[in-house]
Figure 1 (cartoon, rainbow, N blue to C red):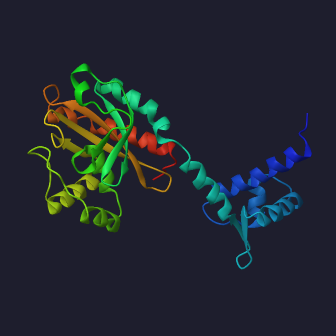
Figure 2: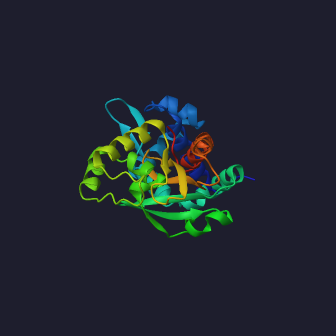
Figure 3: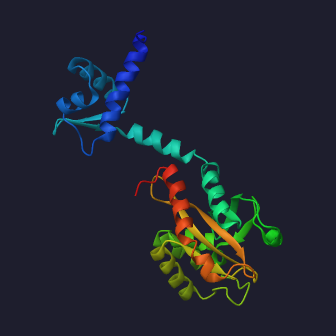
Length: 256
């Protein structure tokens, strides 16, 4: 059974847009027609309609077609509406199953982090386990530091210029210069570590989650009590943590 005329037009229009999306550079008409697998007359008519709607742009000078900004706007709005907490759940569960410690997901709000997802934690960690909606200072948590480390330099400077790096334990970094050095190292290595910086009894590691624009929008961490997990054991989990964060990033449209 053949489709309706409206369906045929839609399918053929999608074929043209899809061909342009897969191209690494603007396409000549003859190449676009071949890639879409459509007749020249049909392609010419549909490309005219797509151009009028801003979905396709025709460069008169180079005689080539490319996707229009309207497509980019739709893509941006779509990805911005994807809830990272829901997307990350499966990877967080798999990570939790491997390490048997609490795995949390946080976003940044200025110089604070807000936990938006957390796995079940072991009983020994319940008194300080992160719950959905909990807030912590960004400067002394693994999730906070890894998100701050990936901020553009001007934005980071603006944040730190008005922030107080409060001391919570003897391990909290409170000197701005030392903190900036810590963030530079975190960005270089791809993960952060907080060893008893907020709570004397807890250490954790975190990795960043990127969106389709390459911007860090969240972070995943593993919490562990110091009496059960030594620092070298915690650091041995960095590879699987980074991989879990990368899996979520790719689901959010990250391609680098």
